[in-house]
Amino acid sequence: MKTQVRPKTDNRAESPSDHAFDGPRGASGARAAVIVPVLTHRGDAGSETKRRSPEARLEEAIGLAAAIELEIVSSGIVNIATPKPGMLFGSGKVEELAAIVQAEEVELLIVDHPLTPIQQRNLEKALKCKVLDRTGLILEIFGARASTAEGTLQVELAHLKWQKSRLVRSWTHLERQRGGLGFIGGPGETQIEADRRLIQERITRLERELAQVSRTRDLHRRKRKKVPQPVVALVGYTNAGKSTLFNRLTRSDVFAKDLLFATLDPTLRRVALPHGREIILSDTVGFISDLPTHLIAAFRATLEEVTEADLVLHVRDIAHEDTQAQAADVTTTLELLGLGDDRDVTIVEVWNKIDLLPPERRDGLLAANGAAKDAVAVSAVTGAGMDDLLARIELELSAGSVVFDVSLPADDGEAIAWLHRNTDVLSREDEEMRCHFRIRVAERRKGEVMQRFRGRLDPVAEPAVS
Image 1 (tube, rainbow, N blue to C red):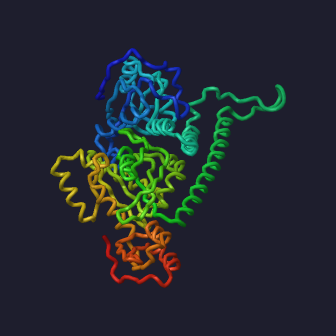
Image 2: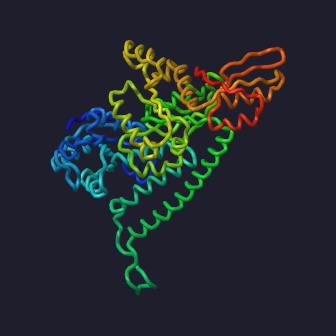
Image 3: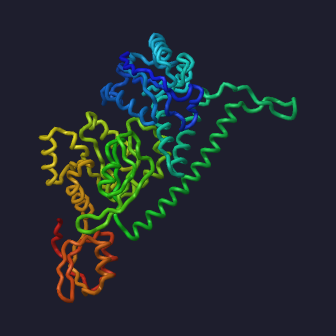
């Protein structure tokens, strides 16, 4: 095993007993080791691990651990020819890990690979420390990031669904409870059955509350469609720079940091496009490789903002060595949400972080922006490419639209303001008593505009897209 040992410190936080890790909070400060198993047998061909280098996987796993402020004292890559059903690793490797755990006083071992409940329990017994797999670690991060009532509900639901299958590991008091009256009567349900029933009841309540959240979001979306400003959703791999781009476009101060899963709850803001039309920009939770399906299900209420969007911007960290693999993971998750090829939703790639590229490649990407064919290259940090991105958004939203000329009295401020709020004003010519506009209207709003300005609209045969 390749192991990177970090120096010990004397100012440790709590003792191992202070970190139960039975809920989605409480992990920060513990001394942790990160292990990335690399399955080398042929049966692993075509899986996620084949798309990424082991070093990149280790870097991401350390980043995940750092996201909840764990103190990483050791990290390494372990090659596994044949996974063992009992502990995943062979006996020799387990002994090596036990030595590292003891020498570095490790309180938590993170295995960047799915572990069965039995494997997790056996490893904890053999290593005498707490063990978390990739899913458990992501749940810890989500728990630390949840800041709203909705986010907390979603995290708790995902955690309970994960924990329900692991009661065989979590409970050792599995003797049968006594049934009947007093000391007579047969055995009742086992403790594990009782705990599983209680968890299922809590899951049912949470799903009911989240269904109400989903209905509320649906109501809000219906109200927005009546205004209506188009919704543009930002999606992408975690730490691709979505929140930084969101802040740049909206001039907001949404929490953005070089940290995995910095954003958990969705945020929506208005943005004005070059010709005055307003859109609603939505920032959502980042995706990640091997994201458990029950996590996607738990966050469906949040991710519905993506499925109902008029335009989706897929933000990519184009400077990352695994940008292609990350893009494939995002595409897979979007397909799980129902945004496949059969959905009539345009997805535009935004190549972010071009400021980290060599100058010649950066200049080439920016020069290609004018073509507006494949992707838009930007830097959310420096602001490079922002005008091109806004123009591309406007271009995509104008597809299938119609163009009218309309003439209004110069003193009809209400009608003029309505035009600017609800249509794309392509041009304006002012005379002494009248104002002449050329406007672009989305097909779905054509009837509304024609009714409001009946008799004053002249269709333009050739829409001029600018």
